[in-house]
Length: 87
Image 1 (spheres, helix red, strand yellow):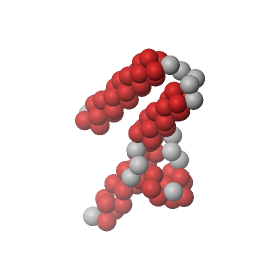
Image 2 (cartoon, rainbow, N blue to C red; image 1 turned 30 degrees about the horizontal axis):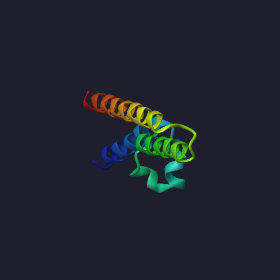
Image 3 (spheres, one colour; image 1 turned 90 degrees about the vertical axis):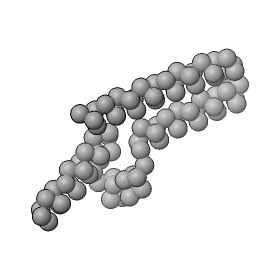
Image 4 (cartoon, rainbow, N blue to C red; image 1 turned 90 degrees about the horizontal axis):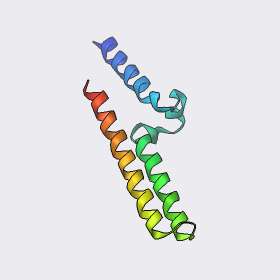
């Protein structure tokens, strides 16, 4: 029973590492276990987009269009992830 539990924990940690996060990173920064790398990337891209608009590098219309595109891409990635988890 203990071996089965240990095996499941190891597989879970290894499975979490497939998104580009190394196994060692979880020990150095434990909050990675509860943070979603996909969402963190989305949030960073959204902040960068907002900074571009606030610094007047893009117009409001461009900001809205890029924001819609970013949201649609994130929604698709989440949907794809959910499909693969359900299989």
